[in-house]
Length: 285
Ligand code: CAA
Image (cartoon, rainbow, N blue to C red; front, side, top):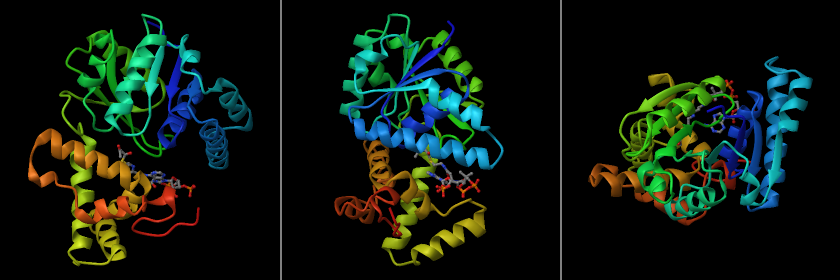
Protein backbone atom coordinates (compact mmCIF):
# COMPACT_ATOMS: atom_id res chain seq x y z
CA UNK A 1 0.00 0.00 0.00
CA UNK A 2 1.38 3.38 -1.03
CA UNK A 3 0.73 6.11 1.55
CA UNK A 4 0.38 9.56 -0.03
CA UNK A 5 -2.20 11.44 1.99
CA UNK A 6 -1.94 11.72 5.76
CA UNK A 7 -4.73 13.00 8.00
CA UNK A 8 -3.82 14.24 11.48
CA UNK A 9 -6.35 14.72 14.28
CA UNK A 10 -5.23 17.31 16.84
CA UNK A 11 -3.23 20.44 15.97
CA UNK A 12 -1.45 20.86 19.31
CA UNK A 13 2.27 20.63 20.04
CA UNK A 14 2.56 17.04 18.71
CA UNK A 15 0.02 17.26 15.87
CA UNK A 16 1.55 20.34 14.25
CA UNK A 17 5.06 18.88 14.59
CA UNK A 18 3.94 15.66 12.88
CA UNK A 19 2.20 17.68 10.15
CA UNK A 20 5.42 19.56 9.50
CA UNK A 21 7.70 16.52 9.22
CA UNK A 22 5.13 14.67 7.09
CA UNK A 23 4.83 17.61 4.67
CA UNK A 24 8.61 18.04 4.73
CA UNK A 25 8.90 14.43 3.48
CA UNK A 26 6.49 15.03 0.58
CA UNK A 27 3.21 13.78 2.06
CA UNK A 28 -0.01 15.71 1.54
CA UNK A 29 -1.34 16.50 4.98
CA UNK A 30 -4.77 17.41 6.21
CA UNK A 31 -4.59 18.74 9.76
CA UNK A 32 -7.86 18.57 11.67
CA UNK A 33 -8.82 20.17 14.98
CA UNK A 34 -12.21 21.07 16.41
CA UNK A 35 -10.80 24.51 17.28
CA UNK A 36 -10.08 26.85 14.36
CA UNK A 37 -7.95 28.92 16.76
CA UNK A 38 -5.75 25.88 17.38
CA UNK A 39 -5.37 25.42 13.61
CA UNK A 40 -4.29 29.04 13.10
CA UNK A 41 -1.79 28.69 15.93
CA UNK A 42 -0.49 25.44 14.42
CA UNK A 43 0.04 27.06 11.04
CA UNK A 44 2.06 29.84 12.65
CA UNK A 45 4.09 27.36 14.71
CA UNK A 46 4.94 25.37 11.58
CA UNK A 47 5.97 28.52 9.68
CA UNK A 48 8.16 29.65 12.62
CA UNK A 49 9.71 26.19 12.90
CA UNK A 50 10.52 26.23 9.15
CA UNK A 51 12.13 29.67 9.60
CA UNK A 52 14.38 28.25 12.33
CA UNK A 53 15.38 25.38 10.01
CA UNK A 54 16.09 27.89 7.21
CA UNK A 55 18.42 29.78 9.58
CA UNK A 56 20.21 26.50 10.31
CA UNK A 57 20.44 25.89 6.50
CA UNK A 58 18.38 22.68 6.83
CA UNK A 59 15.58 24.09 4.62
CA UNK A 60 15.31 26.68 1.85
CA UNK A 61 12.61 29.36 1.47
CA UNK A 62 11.22 27.41 -1.46
CA UNK A 63 10.93 24.23 0.63
CA UNK A 64 9.12 26.20 3.33
CA UNK A 65 6.55 27.33 0.76
CA UNK A 66 6.13 23.74 -0.47
CA UNK A 67 5.70 22.45 3.09
CA UNK A 68 3.02 25.03 3.92
CA UNK A 69 1.25 24.34 0.61
CA UNK A 70 1.13 20.62 1.35
CA UNK A 71 -0.76 21.19 4.62
CA UNK A 72 -4.47 21.98 4.53
CA UNK A 73 -6.50 22.75 7.64
CA UNK A 74 -9.99 21.65 8.60
CA UNK A 75 -12.34 21.52 11.58
CA UNK A 76 -14.30 18.59 10.04
CA UNK A 77 -13.37 14.96 10.65
CA UNK A 78 -15.19 14.03 7.40
CA UNK A 79 -12.49 15.92 5.44
CA UNK A 80 -10.07 13.12 6.33
CA UNK A 81 -12.01 10.61 4.22
CA UNK A 82 -9.36 10.50 1.46
CA UNK A 83 -6.42 9.95 3.81
CA UNK A 84 -4.42 6.71 3.46
CA UNK A 85 -3.08 7.05 7.00
CA UNK A 86 -4.86 8.82 9.88
CA UNK A 87 -2.78 9.85 12.88
CA UNK A 88 -4.54 10.67 16.15
CA UNK A 89 -2.54 13.25 18.14
CA UNK A 90 -5.09 14.46 20.69
CA UNK A 91 -4.73 15.06 24.43
CA UNK A 92 -3.55 12.05 26.48
CA UNK A 93 -7.06 11.05 27.58
CA UNK A 94 -8.36 7.54 26.94
CA UNK A 95 -12.07 8.35 26.52
CA UNK A 96 -11.30 11.15 24.09
CA UNK A 97 -8.95 8.96 22.06
CA UNK A 98 -11.51 6.13 21.90
CA UNK A 99 -14.10 8.59 20.60
CA UNK A 100 -11.69 9.88 17.97
CA UNK A 101 -10.82 6.33 16.86
CA UNK A 102 -14.52 5.58 16.42
CA UNK A 103 -14.94 8.72 14.30
CA UNK A 104 -11.81 8.06 12.23
CA UNK A 105 -13.04 4.50 11.61
CA UNK A 106 -16.38 5.84 10.36
CA UNK A 107 -14.99 8.39 7.91
CA UNK A 108 -11.86 6.64 6.62
CA UNK A 109 -11.84 4.43 3.54
CA UNK A 110 -11.67 0.69 4.40
CA UNK A 111 -8.03 0.40 3.30
CA UNK A 112 -6.83 3.29 5.48
CA UNK A 113 -4.57 2.72 8.49
CA UNK A 114 -5.39 4.36 11.84
CA UNK A 115 -2.53 5.09 14.23
CA UNK A 116 -2.18 6.82 17.57
CA UNK A 117 0.57 9.10 18.81
CA UNK A 118 -0.36 8.10 22.36
CA UNK A 119 2.61 8.03 24.70
CA UNK A 120 1.15 5.47 27.09
CA UNK A 121 -2.44 4.32 26.42
CA UNK A 122 -3.16 0.74 25.26
CA UNK A 123 -3.13 0.46 21.45
CA UNK A 124 -5.11 -2.78 21.73
CA UNK A 125 -7.91 -0.91 23.51
CA UNK A 126 -7.99 1.92 20.94
CA UNK A 127 -7.98 -0.68 18.11
CA UNK A 128 -10.94 -2.43 19.72
CA UNK A 129 -13.02 0.75 19.29
CA UNK A 130 -12.74 0.32 15.49
CA UNK A 131 -13.94 -2.20 12.93
CA UNK A 132 -10.34 -2.73 11.72
CA UNK A 133 -8.09 -3.58 14.69
CA UNK A 134 -5.57 -5.23 12.34
CA UNK A 135 -5.02 -1.82 10.70
CA UNK A 136 -4.29 0.02 13.96
CA UNK A 137 -0.93 0.55 15.66
CA UNK A 138 1.03 3.05 17.76
CA UNK A 139 3.32 5.67 16.19
CA UNK A 140 4.77 7.68 19.06
CA UNK A 141 6.75 10.81 18.12
CA UNK A 142 8.99 12.70 20.56
CA UNK A 143 8.91 16.41 21.26
CA UNK A 144 10.03 18.65 19.59
CA UNK A 145 8.96 16.51 16.63
CA UNK A 146 10.99 18.29 13.90
CA UNK A 147 14.23 17.79 15.86
CA UNK A 148 13.86 14.45 17.62
CA UNK A 149 15.00 11.36 15.71
CA UNK A 150 12.95 8.66 17.44
CA UNK A 151 9.52 7.29 16.67
CA UNK A 152 8.37 4.35 18.80
CA UNK A 153 6.28 1.79 16.94
CA UNK A 154 3.81 -0.20 19.04
CA UNK A 155 1.99 -3.32 17.92
CA UNK A 156 -1.47 -3.82 19.38
CA UNK A 157 -2.47 -7.43 20.00
CA UNK A 158 -4.28 -7.55 16.64
CA UNK A 159 -1.99 -5.31 14.54
CA UNK A 160 -1.13 -7.10 11.28
CA UNK A 161 2.54 -7.41 10.25
CA UNK A 162 1.65 -5.58 7.02
CA UNK A 163 0.26 -2.55 8.92
CA UNK A 164 3.38 -2.38 11.06
CA UNK A 165 5.70 -2.56 8.03
CA UNK A 166 3.82 0.23 6.20
CA UNK A 167 3.97 2.50 9.26
CA UNK A 168 7.68 1.72 9.68
CA UNK A 169 8.21 2.74 6.03
CA UNK A 170 6.40 6.06 6.59
CA UNK A 171 8.54 6.78 9.67
CA UNK A 172 11.72 6.05 7.71
CA UNK A 173 10.58 8.26 4.82
CA UNK A 174 10.16 11.04 7.39
CA UNK A 175 13.86 10.61 8.20
CA UNK A 176 13.18 9.23 11.68
CA UNK A 177 14.47 6.10 13.41
CA UNK A 178 11.79 3.51 14.13
CA UNK A 179 12.21 1.50 17.34
CA UNK A 180 9.73 -1.25 18.06
CA UNK A 181 8.07 -1.79 21.41
CA UNK A 182 7.29 -5.48 21.04
CA UNK A 183 4.64 -5.47 23.76
CA UNK A 184 1.71 -3.08 24.09
CA UNK A 185 2.33 -2.34 27.78
CA UNK A 186 1.68 1.00 29.59
CA UNK A 187 4.28 3.63 28.68
CA UNK A 188 5.88 1.42 25.99
CA UNK A 189 9.69 1.99 26.14
CA UNK A 190 10.40 5.72 26.48
CA UNK A 191 7.77 6.73 29.02
CA UNK A 192 8.14 3.53 31.05
CA UNK A 193 11.67 4.72 31.79
CA UNK A 194 11.53 8.53 31.39
CA UNK A 195 8.40 9.31 33.43
CA UNK A 196 9.43 7.49 36.64
CA UNK A 197 12.72 9.45 36.43
CA UNK A 198 10.85 12.76 36.07
CA UNK A 199 8.44 11.72 38.86
CA UNK A 200 11.43 10.89 41.10
CA UNK A 201 12.96 14.32 40.37
CA UNK A 202 9.65 15.86 41.54
CA UNK A 203 9.81 13.72 44.72
CA UNK A 204 13.36 15.02 45.28
CA UNK A 205 11.97 18.56 45.14
CA UNK A 206 8.92 17.62 47.26
CA UNK A 207 11.13 16.11 49.96
CA UNK A 208 13.39 19.19 50.01
CA UNK A 209 16.46 17.35 48.75
CA UNK A 210 17.38 20.28 46.48
CA UNK A 211 16.01 23.30 44.65
CA UNK A 212 14.71 22.87 41.05
CA UNK A 213 17.80 24.53 39.55
CA UNK A 214 20.12 22.25 41.53
CA UNK A 215 18.19 19.08 40.57
CA UNK A 216 18.33 20.01 36.90
CA UNK A 217 21.96 21.10 36.97
CA UNK A 218 22.98 17.89 38.75
CA UNK A 219 21.22 15.69 36.18
CA UNK A 220 22.49 17.74 33.23
CA UNK A 221 26.12 17.82 34.27
CA UNK A 222 26.16 14.51 36.13
CA UNK A 223 24.39 12.36 33.55
CA UNK A 224 24.85 14.32 30.32
CA UNK A 225 21.16 14.98 29.74
CA UNK A 226 20.46 17.94 27.40
CA UNK A 227 17.97 19.43 29.85
CA UNK A 228 17.20 18.62 33.48
CA UNK A 229 14.14 16.47 34.34
CA UNK A 230 12.11 19.34 35.84
CA UNK A 231 12.68 21.56 32.80
CA UNK A 232 11.78 18.64 30.55
CA UNK A 233 8.58 18.04 32.57
CA UNK A 234 7.66 21.72 32.06
CA UNK A 235 8.24 21.34 28.30
CA UNK A 236 6.21 18.11 28.06
CA UNK A 237 3.37 19.62 30.15
CA UNK A 238 2.74 18.64 33.76
CA UNK A 239 -0.81 17.50 32.94
CA UNK A 240 0.62 15.10 30.34
CA UNK A 241 3.25 13.86 32.84
CA UNK A 242 0.49 13.23 35.40
CA UNK A 243 -1.72 11.41 32.87
CA UNK A 244 1.18 9.14 31.91
CA UNK A 245 2.06 8.40 35.56
CA UNK A 246 -1.61 7.53 36.19
CA UNK A 247 -1.61 5.15 33.21
CA UNK A 248 1.59 3.48 34.53
CA UNK A 249 0.22 3.31 38.09
CA UNK A 250 -3.19 1.91 37.12
CA UNK A 251 -1.95 -0.30 34.28
CA UNK A 252 1.02 -1.87 36.05
CA UNK A 253 -0.50 -1.82 39.55
CA UNK A 254 2.80 -1.16 41.29
CA UNK A 255 3.04 1.59 43.94
CA UNK A 256 6.46 2.59 42.60
CA UNK A 257 4.57 4.44 39.83
CA UNK A 258 2.53 6.56 42.29
CA UNK A 259 2.45 10.15 40.96
CA UNK A 260 4.25 12.56 43.28
CA UNK A 261 1.68 14.60 45.32
CA UNK A 262 3.51 17.79 44.29
CA UNK A 263 2.89 16.97 40.62
CA UNK A 264 -0.82 16.47 41.39
CA UNK A 265 -0.94 19.81 43.26
CA UNK A 266 0.72 21.74 40.43
CA UNK A 267 -1.75 20.34 37.90
CA UNK A 268 -4.66 21.19 40.25
CA UNK A 269 -3.32 24.75 40.43
CA UNK A 270 -3.22 25.00 36.64
CA UNK A 271 0.59 25.13 36.72
CA UNK A 272 1.07 23.01 33.63
CA UNK A 273 4.59 24.06 32.66
CA UNK A 274 5.78 26.15 29.72
CA UNK A 275 2.40 26.24 27.95
CA UNK A 276 0.63 27.85 30.95
CA UNK A 277 3.53 30.16 31.83
CA UNK A 278 4.26 28.42 35.12
CA UNK A 279 5.47 25.00 36.19
CA UNK A 280 8.67 24.31 38.11
CA UNK A 281 9.90 27.52 36.48
CA UNK A 282 8.13 30.61 35.15
CA UNK A 283 7.96 31.43 31.43
CA UNK A 284 6.94 34.53 29.52
CA UNK A 285 4.12 33.39 27.19
N1 CAA B 1 9.64 20.00 24.02
C1 CAA B 1 9.32 21.11 23.31
N2 CAA B 1 10.23 21.96 22.80
C2 CAA B 1 11.54 21.68 23.06
C3 CAA B 1 11.94 20.54 23.79
C4 CAA B 1 10.92 19.67 24.28
N3 CAA B 1 11.22 18.56 24.98
N4 CAA B 1 13.29 20.54 23.86
C5 CAA B 1 13.71 21.64 23.20
N5 CAA B 1 12.66 22.32 22.72
C6 CAA B 1 12.67 23.57 21.93
C7 CAA B 1 13.45 24.68 22.65
O1 CAA B 1 12.60 25.38 23.55
C8 CAA B 1 13.85 25.57 21.50
O2 CAA B 1 12.75 26.39 21.12
P1 CAA B 1 12.98 27.92 20.67
O3 CAA B 1 13.83 27.83 19.43
O4 CAA B 1 11.59 28.43 20.43
O5 CAA B 1 13.69 28.58 21.81
C9 CAA B 1 14.10 24.57 20.36
O6 CAA B 1 13.42 23.34 20.74
C10 CAA B 1 15.55 24.27 20.16
O7 CAA B 1 16.09 23.87 21.42
P2 CAA B 1 17.63 24.14 21.82
O8 CAA B 1 17.87 25.62 21.88
O9 CAA B 1 17.95 23.30 23.02
O10 CAA B 1 18.37 23.65 20.48
P3 CAA B 1 19.36 22.48 20.23
O11 CAA B 1 19.40 22.31 18.75
O12 CAA B 1 20.64 22.70 20.96
O13 CAA B 1 18.72 21.17 20.88
C11 CAA B 1 17.13 19.45 21.26
C12 CAA B 1 17.44 20.77 20.54
C13 CAA B 1 18.00 18.34 20.66
C14 CAA B 1 15.66 19.15 20.99
C15 CAA B 1 17.45 19.59 22.78
O14 CAA B 1 16.86 20.77 23.29
C16 CAA B 1 16.93 18.40 23.56
O15 CAA B 1 17.54 17.33 23.50
N6 CAA B 1 15.81 18.57 24.30
C17 CAA B 1 15.19 17.50 25.05
C18 CAA B 1 14.25 16.78 24.16
C19 CAA B 1 13.62 15.58 24.79
O16 CAA B 1 14.10 14.97 25.73
N7 CAA B 1 12.48 15.20 24.23
C20 CAA B 1 11.77 14.06 24.65
C21 CAA B 1 10.63 14.50 25.45
S1 CAA B 1 9.71 13.09 25.95
C22 CAA B 1 8.59 12.86 24.75
O17 CAA B 1 8.43 13.61 23.84
C23 CAA B 1 7.79 11.64 24.93
C24 CAA B 1 6.52 11.82 25.64
O18 CAA B 1 5.61 11.12 25.33
C25 CAA B 1 6.36 12.74 26.77
